[in-house]
Length: 193
Image (cartoon, rainbow, N blue to C red; front, side, top):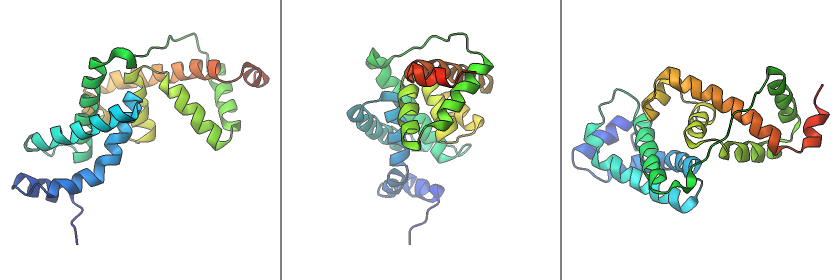
């Protein structure tokens, strides 16, 4: 029976059993690919970056010191690999201007959002998230969808906790603006008070 403890497979890999690394690849390939697709928005690029991530992780496994979870360390490797790919291909850069968003507008957007069917909601959220700048989109994804703690996100993206909080706040405001522009104006106006 296979041992599911990451440390066990890391140690075996470091001791020369390269097949043990296959367990870690199997365990984390979906996590790495999901992060890559969120950052790059292109399947082929994401598949290549996922492979590159595991190659880099394998080659630098001896530098994993166990201060964080292996998954957090691997997220960081994947994140940096995605950033490298984005730098090579600037067509993925995206920016949204923050308009003046009031608390009332955020509340109205949440009411509309709550009234949508789950499938509609999922499609709209993905479309809106894709319009965020890459760094904010990734932080939102890690925090809300991957449910990483702020500390774990700090380890992944190498920003301070305060900077991450600011980016989360800005991203939420931008999402409201994007949401207002994306949802049919008639639907949105019908919820205004």
